[in-house]
Amino acid sequence: MFDRPDSNAAFDDLSDKEAVVLVHLNFNDPDYDESQMEFKELVGSTGANIAALVEGKRHRPDPKYFAGSGKVDEVAEFVHASHAALVIFNHELSPSQERNLEHKLKCRVLGRTGLILDIFARRARSHEGKLQVELAQLQHLSTRLIRGWTHLERQKGGIGMRGPGETQLETDRRLLGQRIKTLKKKLDKVRSQREQGRRSRQRGGVPVVSLVGYTNMGKSTLFNKVTSAEVYADDRLFATLDPTLRRVKLHDTEMLILADTVGFIRDLPHDLVESFSSTLEETRDAALLLHVVDCASGDREELIHHVNDVLKQIEAHELPQLIIYNKIDNVDGMKPRIERNADGNIHRIWLSAKSGEGLELLRQALQEYFPQQDQSDYLN
Image (cartoon, rainbow, N blue to C red; front, side):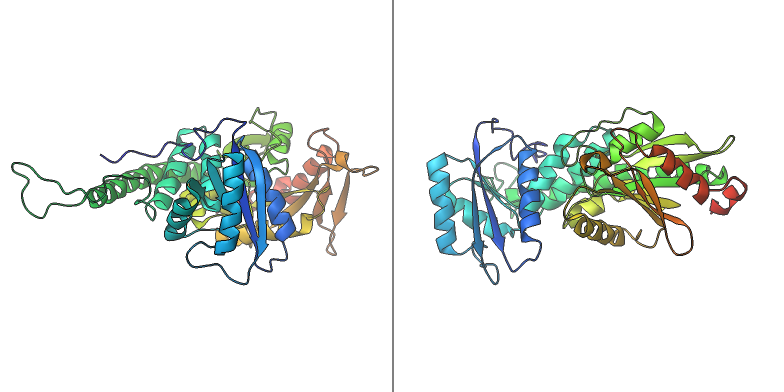
């Protein structure tokens, strides 16, 4: 039988004190330092202990090992010295590269997508979130099914089983394909239910405002302050995966819906974008995006660019945005304020979701954007 992968398969036999070796190569990437910092945060959020970080420069990946043979020997030395059970590359590895590296290093090897999938599996709490993560895991696994199986080429036989039969690998692929179809059907049902909810909100003239932004920018904290909800929020990557919608009173008689969704990241794997499409539709169908940015971050403009790239992937890049510069309490002397564009419209708000400074400015901006007499303009 095909066994579904454990949601924490990469790290489930690693304790917090056991070691992993990281590999990050520079292919003339202008964002190399920022990408490396994010890579360490991603691994740190799993609870693993980083024993070593192996770096190097290349013009192009090696077809066999991704890294050159000399660099792989260097990684092997760190694996041996630290007794590491896992090596993680901050790059996409082909199935054959993963197998070659595991054979050479004598331990498990994980690429960037596998790492992010593991983190998503740990964070998913709702039924929908778990379905989405499992679908992404299985779609990723489908190209790597040969890994870890000791019985792949064993032919079926016995009385009544004579003939060509099928290999265990073919059986596993068939059962995996069936599970993927089942998950897609379940998620289609969820998508249909969400669509009914959206149509109901549209008929009632209730606009949806969606919080977007890079992961760990404070979206969920802002969501909790504005809606008085108790959505899980933490200072770590991908603390929130499951979408949450709450009504917010905007004027005396009218409401809007505020939606909190998964945070984005550099090079968000395609499998995740596809699997989380039903969640991301809440963003795509919004009347307004609140793009939350950490104003204290030195690379905030670069992160804005990455978020806009993901918005383009999900066809939400043309939606109107208000930029919310959050965490002003982390910058000495910074005060809450509003910035307007040349047309006099609010397009930037500086505030602190944690302390509550500037939240009244956000309410002012939303009231201006959705004036009471024009609520019907947002019906589709």
